[in-house]
Length: 540
Image 1 (cartoon, rainbow, N blue to C red):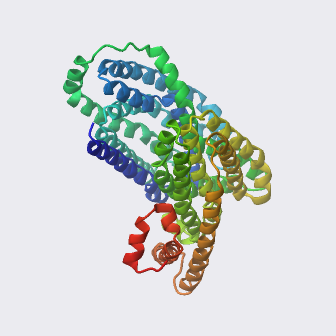
Image 2 (cartoon, one colour):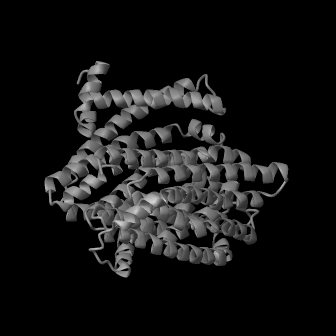
Image 3 (cartoon, rainbow, N blue to C red):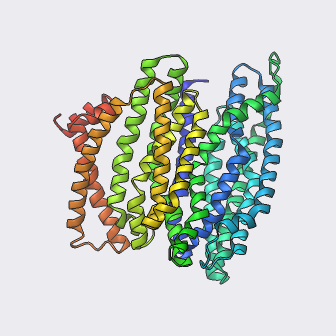
């Protein structure tokens, strides 16, 4: 396969993923308005968070592994093996999907009882209905993911990219139109509207699988022709291959559902702790909606961007480690951490400083939401570091430690959740999450240092410089914000948008100028900084 075709395929898949994630992040604005606040978002998450965990278990990394093995055997002309793996994989994914659906549907009353908040206005039966509504998607999505993996194994990224975008568009359209129709035309309940919103995952998955099947039958003639040319020289035991798949995939699955596991701890404990220390059920429900939905959706934006940038370097780390090129491994690890911190630090600090206009633009001017977002934003740095260190552990073939890293983080979160919430209220939950991720990241870094023989001294020095630049940037943003709010009211959406543009622009200019002037940009992104500096006439 030509490198230009490979790059084109990667670009198409990346673009599809970006559009899908963009839609997945920004539908929350109209959905929040339709539902009338953060409280109903808690009910939505009561169904959606367990669903994401069940989905991770149902797919168990098989689609990704199928893509890898299909590509491997196609490369040596053994097309029959890939087709056999695909056929058996469809049956396996159908079976795990149906079993997961039955398990989630049957366990819905138990999960609802563990999550529901006394006095919130939502009964165990309400939560049960929402969980059961989303569980139907488990029947379809594992098979859908497998077909995507099959196409990717043939280096055909278009079907995956197009189906991802179609899935999100159909899901979000059904979610918004359905919930609005139930509430404002049929005069239904919030519980019915949220059930429709979670059921949208099933409708989106159906649209995606129809799209993928269209691609499959359109290309079946060509795929069958390739299958007939299969050499038949290699004999592979499918049971042993599936054994390898599951052993390899488990760490990927665990990392993939890490965020959902942290959210699930909140959903089991948050409401009970707050009501126990004196909050009403309605207050606890509203605050959980902010922590686990409203603020979390905003915090995940810089995490997604930074992780995407740094993750592109991780395959280079893997390749260098496999070849035993120790110096190259160190260089690539330096690049990964520098890019991640260079992007994440200013984004998260800026988000904390501008939490008021940011929360107002997306949702409404809510003091509780603003306070939690400002507190939550710096934790996003730890979320990014966890994703990247976990990927590096997999790259240096020490993926067993990714599971241990996550488990000690979740244990830390569980231990400190109650004392921190008794001390800090809702923010204590965020602090416990931050503490959990901190422990996981430190543990992962110790393992990376030991097994990759990597010294973090360069990164520590660069981090100190970045923190100094971010401090200067923060002072500039705060001064600008204080000045602009003298005549711009941050309580309206338009004014808040104006404040974000003006103050965010000040922060970007200060950070960008100092990075170029002090050659930090050069150290992170290489020689291209000199060209930028020359064009902007900045002296170093």
